[in-house]
Image (cartoon, rainbow over all chains, first blue to last red; front, side, top):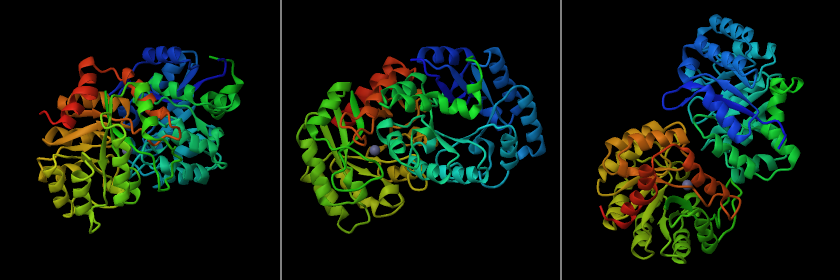
Length: 253
Length: 253
Ligand SMILES: [Zn+2]
């Protein structure tokens, strides 16, 4: 198939229980037919060693000629230093912001992250927000954050998997600038419901493998099994995320 | 292999998921297609609305293929008739276990009404399978507290903590003699770590089949196929899919 396939979120480096090297990621992308992947750094680098993380993701992007696209990270508790960090990451080629309120220890609605999102808005970066179970990172507060910044595209990482999949649809309806990601979500229950919802639809879903927490083959196999009209499949698998990142104006990596 | 977490269709209740109609023959066809020899089939309607008829329906469903399907009933534990109905589900209907879903059924694991219920489960050599991985009322620590009070009853964490609470589920499975966990909707990296760290005889696997919009249970098939991507050993796989569930169901300790 010759549609552009973009993996909207993976994490490289050594995490607490899992790891993903750039080489292993590229091999998995080749194996599963993924053209480009947007990479965040390790858990420790998201939480506190932001400079090492931004160096890792932007270096991976440069080393692969842009096949990998860098997320920037900065712990919002660092205040002005977090903005300096994002500016540095931007200079190094980062093209999106990733936040994880569970790892970084803040509440999506406490205002700490707002200056970082404002930075993302100024640079036309999409913002990836990790979601899941209570207390801190549910789909609906993510939608509330998205509504504070209607000009910014937000990706709802994991779409509230699993027991807050039920909140993902109301979140997507509430904030039109919010996109669900497909990781872990069965198409024959969760994603199919989003697709059929007249206020959501497949144009609001982006493919993510969430490696190394999930498997490249398993996530892609479910996408291939999902019977969708070709243009909708192309949107979910890549063109929507490419549009959010501004990749479509570039030659393929 | 034995699938330790599946459901009947939803016959009488509405749910946020679409769901599909299927009968026991359809279900066994799904099992055959993916290589499942036996499945624990949990009540579905009874989780939303407890009635004796819901348990009758589970017994009727598994009764079509008694060699392949093992039925677990349910009943909202606070109802005054709960004790009598749970006794009937074992003694008359021949169900082998009790499924509880504290966040759907609206109770805490620390409520004293559960103690006489657990005595009934113990008297029939039954198993308790409890939904876990979801705050506020379905966490492994809460479920382990009940398990400690009833050491003769094997208590299974139905989802091994899902995405955000799997470390807690692993911990309490390690320290609680009669607590087991069923990897079902748990992300692959967590499954691999659990298999590495949990007592080897305590890990089970389930697909949550029954919730799909298709009788062919496509996401359940995908979950089985994905096991090969987890990076676990053949011995771990065999223990999880064959030996451990057989030992629990067939009683040979
Ligand atoms: Zn279930």
